Every structure is written in C-alpha cells, then in structure tokens.
Length: 213
Image (cartoon, rainbow, N blue to C red):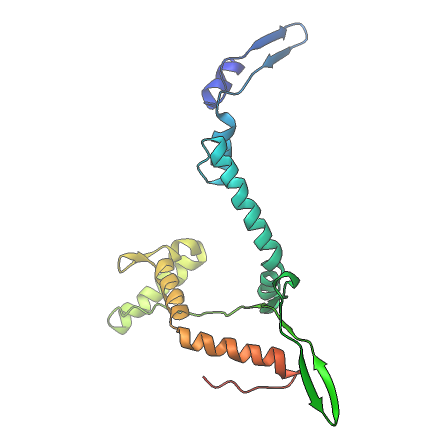
C-alpha cells in the first residue's frame, strides 16, 4: 500500500527495483530509482526555467554565473540603498583608464600629474508615492464607500488591494501610477543629475552644491 501511494503521488518514481520486508520486525526496505529525466524535470520546476537537456542546463549555469558576478559587484550597494537610501559601487581597478602624464605648474613649482578615471555607480532609493482617487458621486456615496473599505481593511487588507476598479485591481492601478512617475523623469533630467553627482564626488569635498534642473 505504501508503494502504491508513492507511485500515485509522484510521476517521477517507477515501480521499485527491489523490495525486502520483515513482517516480524515491522520493517520494509525498498529501492527505487527515478525515471529518466526526473532530475531535469524537478530542476525546471524548482528554478522556474525550462531545463530539458544538458545544453539547457549548461546555459542556465552560465547565466547563474553571470548573475552571481553582477550581484557580487552591486549587491552591497543595493543593500545599503535599501537600508539608508544611498549605496555606492566603488570603481573596479580593471576598468581604470589612465591619462597621459601632464606637467603642472603651481606657485613656481613644476610637477607631473598622473590621473586615472573609472566608473562608479551610485544607487539612490527614491520613495515614490502614488494615489488612486475615484470620484464616486455625492458625499453620501463617498462616505459609504470609505466606511466599507475601512471595515474591509480591518478584516482582510489583501482583499481591498485586489478590489476591481475600472477593470483593474487597486494594486494594479497604484503600480501603474508609481511606474508612470518614474518614467516622467526624462533623459535630459537624468543626464543633469549624473553631471551634478559627478561634480559632487570629484569637486564637492564635503561642501554643498546647489542643483538647478
């Protein structure tokens, strides 16, 4: 009965290869081998990717390696941004670009400037706020709807956010509102922000710089 239950609950288990029972001691020893392809099938289900061959498994492992390398580089910065609002990915020495030596004169002295540049990445957490404000008609209708939502929020908050409104859930409407605000920051503004942060890093020296957009 136990073997029949195992086979019925899992398509990956074929009939047992061998079986030994000891009725006097109440023990049973069963040897079962997984079906062909069971490993890839279980792996596909576990990682959410279709892995149906050794080649697909190799591609998955390569993508995992790339993802781990990227996470090792930027993961700490995102963790800092999540905790305190600002994280920095320091420059990688392998990405340094060296400029040609140049003579510099200051106060009657002559020196040589040896400079290098490398990209760093600054991760800023911006708390975006959005709101959905449906117009429901008169004061009585609005107050009644507000009371209904308040009571439902106490009983089941998730149900409120999944309430259908204008053909979409409240959660979806709010998500679109938040994404729309982020897209509203155009490329020109982002370029100015980049230049401003670059100046702060290279020239700020802890002072205050006024940013005009």
